[in-house]
Length: 278
Figure (cartoon, rainbow, N blue to C red):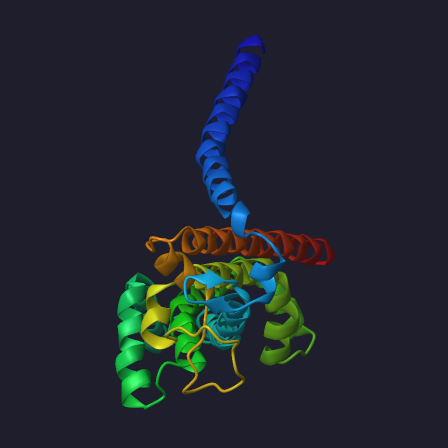
């Protein structure tokens, strides 16, 4: 018992030390970005649009929510539907194998390649120009594989007995999938959607080729409408030889960190409530 206690304490100390070592670069990164962003963190940044290398980030903040939200509206339903097909409808068919292979390949494609594909097909081929819809579709293509795989994996962990019990009571397949399988797999599905959202918030390359950039507030038009977004401000303004531009770049980076942290906190609470009620 004494030796087991010593090993338990030793492993606890090692885990604690490793956790602290992991926190050091994270805290350092947050502090660096926050300290550099402080001069630009004011009401003007939130209410004014970008003006050259100065001004605010209102257009980029609204544009980020607009293009990322639209991309998520495209990626989540398609990804969940594909995951349900792979996990519930035809898990062993040849077509399912093709879908899995295609999903894995798409997950490994560099985001800049997806951006160039969007530029050739949508910006030039369809004649949309730099637009919100082209950017949203590019982000959706990046996020769909993660939603598909997480949905399939989450559904695979649902006990088979729950499905059999539902169908034994006379419930059709659609009701079983919707009311039993998906409800039990909701935390895993939400994790995939959260991952897709986090990836979309941090992407720059695909939006450079598809959404372009605009210093004006976003319009409701989906095509022929360039749009601003925070990652562009980080990528562009950090290299400018002006302090105002550098401050905006760090402010945009800090806002992205805050948004991603809020998304994770909200998602964890939703997952916790869903698991408790399930």
